Image (cartoon, rainbow, N blue to C red; front, side, top):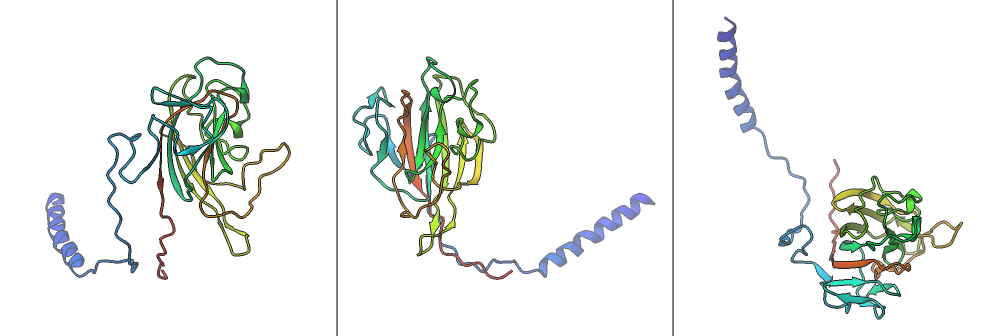
Length: 253
């Protein structure tokens, strides 16, 4: 009896569900979307996609200013004095770069393989050798320097190549120069999420005892790779402009 009722119930259930589905209308959001552009991905996650702006492909630093003392050899750019700054300006942006701290370890703490990615020349994602190297948590590799430690320490050993993939949302100011939306950063260190849409509390504070603050600036600015006295090497640097403010209006729920 149990099997017979089960079979009968199954037989009645299918037409009932079909009839219910047939009477339903597809829900639509009501938003008129712009057709997404077609982008061809790179062969690997490190390779630039078809819409990327390649800033360093291993031959020269012509996309940057200030690289006169840097050495470019065997497809690698190594810091040798002076911070390099992009000639092009960026706002909301995806940044990919690969870096290598010196294989020979000298010093400790902030004295090991120290550099930094300064988005809009103001907001720093720390670059350094944090492999078995104790330092303040909010200034180790993958941190938003002096603001937010990384979720985890994903650093590889000294001398090994490492990757940063950064999604940066530029801050927005009103007509009076008041901050209305803070900058946010998502950071993948060697493929590991270490920052997820973390808000920045202002520009990176460079002076001891001073907290960073927001001062109005243009929507697009260059970014730089910091010279901090260590011969940190870089390769495969590319970016993508992100169209985050697309002007869509969401209907009332």
